[in-house]
Image (cartoon, rainbow, N blue to C red; front, side, top):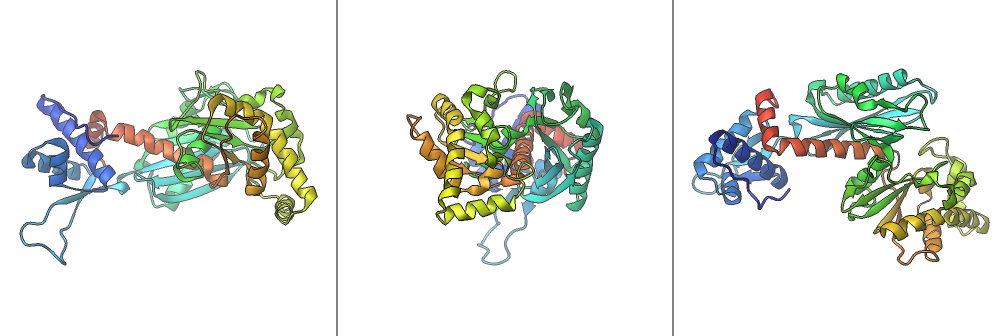
Length: 392
């Protein structure tokens, strides 16, 4: 959101809302803002700038900082305002076969807490939905927050997800296809609920706080019994027309069936389970053991054909490998890179996940923050928050 393009209007009521939205954006992105700085960015008079900021203080969206008591200059101190990150919260939820994870952040993205609720892999839809609400309630309680503090919730789930929050196909969870997950969950939350594919959210999480934070074009590779990818182009998710972009693991001709049958694909019992034997294999590979290195080399070769097709199509800056196999770190990335060099015109950087089992809920929390910012820093969003008594 550019701060050098101030909004302008002539109708008094609309002008007030636009000025408030512009001021809130400026405070949020500069962390702290004086009346003079707001005047410089918007062209508002001092009287109008102070009125706008005072209104945002009353609405609970910003707060005025007390003047300094030490080293204070002669004359009236500058009035300084900061965004109230504690005015609300954002939640990210990860639905997996055996667990539900929930993360809560403040409005600036600072972590408040996380919770994990275990569920049987064979759980019915109703049981799993109840576990989602249980995880949400527990993380709110742990962080001393009420349900009314939530401004947005994003839920990551296996399956092909449509823009309306419906799941069309899901092979991972029983009874999890052909229904609207958003409609099922929304009544339990008094805020906007977004549903997104979990692999996509892992890519978002890694870009926000993980391995690809410095890049706009990246591909996330979820390893395991089935290979899934998520695509970030220009810093945005590429979902495809029906939300099925990246499901190249369905195409057996890419030889990813060989990945599924490879012993390393079974490392760990879950998405990121730690298998002591796998970690031992990584350790001996790093020590130079030829048999261990050969195992990772064959795994990298099995991955490389499908990955080469993705690289040749998208030309990403990097591949980020997630899943249990990612715990191998450079042992795995070197093997993958070595085999991509024989198949690709340009080999991207190959990295492993920094977030591990937290990648989905981290991406979900980031998506909730994006939802909040799109709403809050708009003219209508400021008006709605003011009318509802935000922060009261």
